[in-house]
Image (tube, rainbow, N blue to C red; front, top):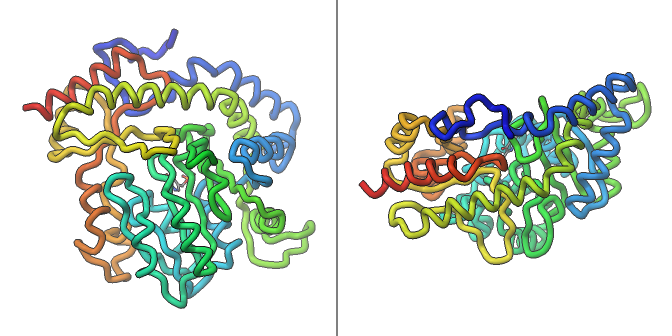
Length: 378
Ligand SMILES: Cc1ncc(COP(=O)(O)O)c(C=O)c1O
């Protein structure tokens, strides 16, 4: 059983719980770290190469390229699409800031396209009006663990001759019409930030692609633009994955399928509680999609008051994300204003992510669900 000191039904229920996970697999992780320490190979070694193959296989694609973080993955994937200074990149405004700042880091301009209000992912119908002669790529985000609606997006992009990048940071293993995220477009980016469904004990990321040429270019880009040692053919930097993180992620990867099932079971249980309660909108899972519930995110009016009431009851929750990118101070110079992307803005005011992790116990889940239901009923 969990040795988590908070794990009694009257104690706090955190929004995520890495302690509960570590209690189960701590010994496996220590062994893996030990293996790397004894190998004395810390950068670009066996563990990273093995992880690249394993993640590529999980996604059903040919190549994986390990990098230092999800943000590195996005910047380098965009570089591999030729994005640079003066280009425009279309992306949703309702995402973590890294999706936008990766575009900005290359001197390119983010151009936002609103989300669909039920899935929180980019609405394919919004793309046409955002394309200009300067558009160089489209980035989709599979938010909370649910794939974006890829068929119309990729169809549109092919027509316009634009590459599509999947920001799959939150959606490893998620499914769309029988395929996995990572295999749904030209190139895809994963983050192994510690709280992700597959998390490192530090920063790490991965890019996957079916193109051998792109993978080879990405390997050069992540290592100072060096095609051969000490000969740099283009600007790059240190975007490498380290061996200790790779070894830890490989341990967790062995558990991922079981963890995803546990998340889905927990999500179904939450939804069973909420589906009959007007005023709570549970996450939508469209037909043919396999949602991996990185977050279990509901929508409620008076979200902020609900969050305070939950906090009083020692129930953790989180808002992903309270400020859409077009309203971030970072992007003030782009001239967007409130009202430009109503679905993203509305979602930012109403979403609340509840405790969600494989180790969440039935009694904890029931306590969370009852606290939320009680608030909405009154
Ligand atoms: C949607 C999204 N994109 C990008 C990132 C950036 O990943 P990282 O923190 O590994 O750089 C994250 C997570 O942090 C994310 O959730």
